[in-house]
Image (cartoon, rainbow, N blue to C red; front, side):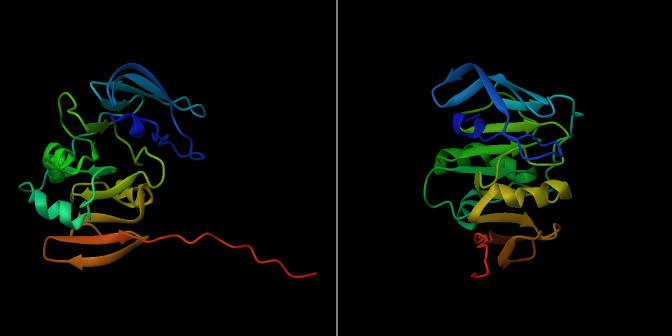
Length: 207
């Protein structure tokens, strides 16, 4: 896992948003290969092995089974608005098949939720464990591509992890969650932009 992504890991348990404390045991360039992470609030732990993050104390979740052939790489890059290099992207299901070439072409760090995968390649890592939330802080990702096998809880939580104006590409079988503005739709997918949240300005009565 990219070091900058590891620093944005957040506890997925239902308490106040809390960053995980990450301890590195082995690194290679920008990649964290071995280590562990822990929550200072609830003591949840995660092992980082071969670049992947495995959450302890949670059941082993099945992979989000792909529902069809891998989509066209160039189309996914265009729909997610990844013309500029860098940042991070989250993928599930059949989109996970594009993880390595997408990371190579866009220079983005790619996180795959619940993928059956071996050793992580440069820029690609998996998050494993039966989680009901995406274990990253708000606005971590430039975009996310969600297959229709993605649990509803993950679909809804994914929105907050996408940066304002970032894009979510998803199967039409998934109902669009709040916080998104639809940009386009066809018989197979919809794509939407994360709505910017304006800061709340407190109004005070003049004395």
